[in-house]
Length: 235
Image (cartoon, rainbow, N blue to C red; front, side):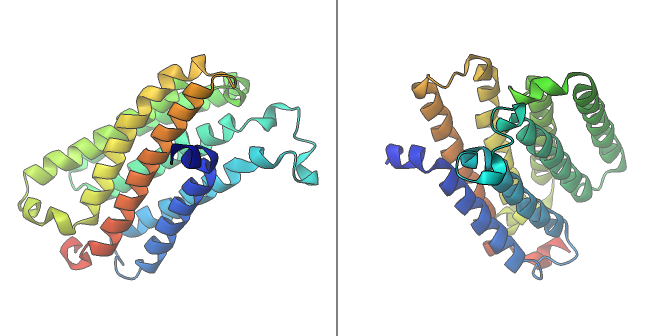
């Protein structure tokens, strides 16, 4: 089974993302006028980010990719750093800003997000070339702090609210538990990226297995949450 997962890692990931995005689109009407609509748009965005980010797999298969081969664009680390580590994290943070009611809390999150953007902007301006070959641990960890922080605040508020009794029918619970656990599991991998070499098959397989099972859990939970949740409780 593991061999199948390793060999079909990208295909499995794309299928998971596409299926969840399609389920989300079918649920758009159900969650009209709620923050869930914005989250569904993020799911579609994530699918396209991962799909187009896989261009490195086809450098030898399509003629129009040949000018890229042998250049720094033959690596897709820059793509995922910008569109996942920066943009996706920012969109998810905005999702929680939409979700939270406390004005002071919103301001604190916005200031933290602004600090994140300032660092990312400085990185792009002064050290963009490094993003072609390795992910930036500061960007990744900063993003993890934003997501884990927002989801933790959601759980704390949930425990203090009477909505706790209805958590199983809230899409926000499924979204938050999935994001919290995914970032908690995957974030430590960034510390080992500097030791990553193509010849180290054991590490590659370990990393892929962690990602594929984490993705399977996260996107399946997203899909279940969108399907079983009751939109009238969000009004």
